[in-house]
Image 1 (cartoon, rainbow, N blue to C red):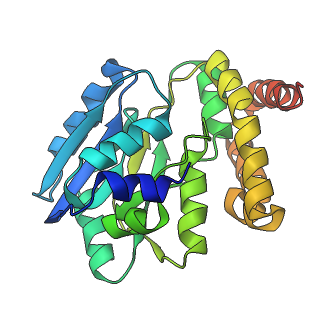
Image 2: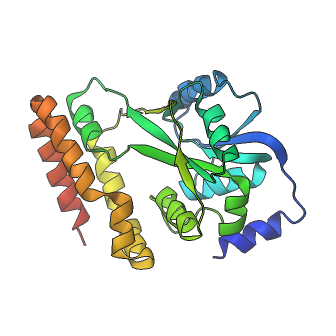
Length: 250
């Protein structure tokens, strides 16, 4: 599929609204969506439109549909279990005006009550979420690749970096990720992500892939977190073993 040409064919002669930020949210769980929308309502930046995409499809497909329906000069892809602090959108727009094309937002993990959910949160590799784009970036490199059932966000970031676009991180705002997930959820995502990670290594090369996923960095981070929370060592080891086995299932 030629994602770039498909988008251009569908939007010939299209024009955006200057200064508008289109926040696009694929919807799976409306219970979590409530807090996501409340966080958007507190934003200090005034020109925002919210596009909810709700149908049975892959995240990449939903994001692409939302983008085509959007009108903003800037686009920000959120998930329904992500809650942004009040200045995030304003800071992202400011960074773009400073000359950057893609903006990353620091991620803060929520602290779930359940023991295993806390263990999963320690393992999760979220430190930044790089999903705020100048519209022209996606118009030039194409939209999300639906061949990736997961990791489509990683793939589009690699594509943009290879095209020479510049990335920056906002200074004070942050994104809170809802960590209320189960071992079953983790196992399912591990199984689904195997093909995606293999494709990323094949297309972009092992060296580029390793720089992006930063495996050694996250291993050290997990160790540091366990040193401050030794009660979770057994649970973390259990989940990591389950993930290791799942990644090697034929």
